[in-house]
Length: 131
Image (cartoon, rainbow, N blue to C red):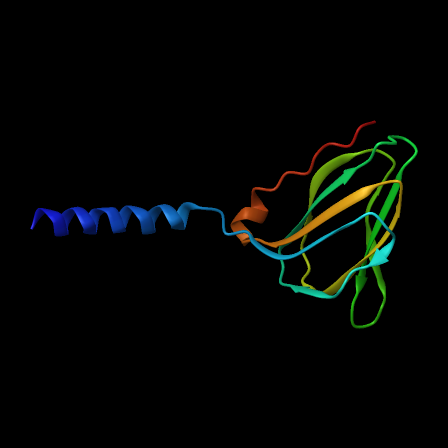
């Protein structure tokens, strides 16, 4: 009897804890060091891009990432332009079928597209830009 009660309590705690964990789901990951256009990916709003750039040549490297509508090829906006290694997260409030157009010189880049919940999006606070 005590064993069943203990198992029930453990299962309850495990399921309750898993509900508290982040709901971010990785949709697609990309990495490289050359200029390219990624394969298509589809996301619902809201979603985030977790990005990282790495280089041995700070200030001389360049990474320029644009978001492109995969169906029409239309430019949706600039995602990142940098000459410095770094990382960050960018929130997007519109879903769709997209591709990234990446122009890269002397840098390695890593991109992770993640689907998030509305609650997670409400907690997102953009980083202040250096002046």
